[in-house]
Length: 277
Image 1 (cartoon, one colour):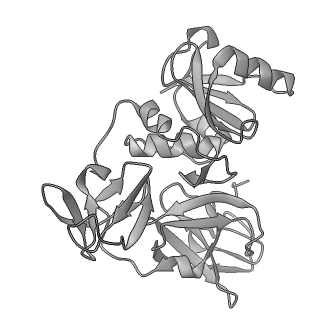
Image 2 (cartoon, rainbow, N blue to C red):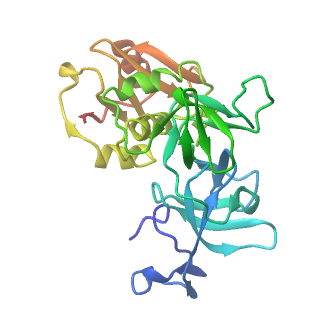
Image 3 (cartoon, helix red, strand yellow):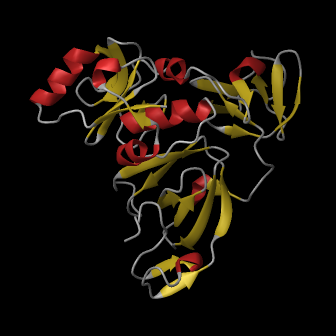
């Protein structure tokens, strides 16, 4: 059975390319849109009080299969394939293809080359921007907004140490489904850090455990290894400490690895694997 979190189908509606694979009353072709808000919540149901499954960031594309009169769209994110409901107000027509992404926890877009001016927008790490030119100090997008040059990197750039990216989020509040400095969860931290480093990564913990790296022994753990439990993941900083977003501390924190493993085991969960990328 296809995972409905990664395949756009319901009993009443499904993507046309799933015809013959799933049962649905109607099959439709999707329409591609762009996320125009800095952060767009993707929810499990079309309601603001519904569970937050993940977040899409500015510049991401989403294929929309349904738009409701209440202002919700149902669609699939292009970046990681996640399916859910997003406010239609967060989307707009496809603009220029992003060339850069924000590579710091938060940056501002100024109306001119002057940081004393009120910013036009605040963007989180991972947001995509179509940069048309650069100066010694700024990257300028298609709207003419100016971003500090050292706050953005080309989409094709890679960074060897994704752990250093995760460490930028230390003390960020824990938020189930979150994927920004405003709030982030364990798998969101892993996904975002790897994406900024130039590596594709699934969204959920179980997807990451299945798709990423090769298994190694817990006794051989080193920087950059991923430690998995059922429903949780942490990133090893070295042989003795790890960083993770967790609901125990309600923030991104650094813990002694042995102590964290013992604490989580006492709560009823053992380590299921250690993966090396």
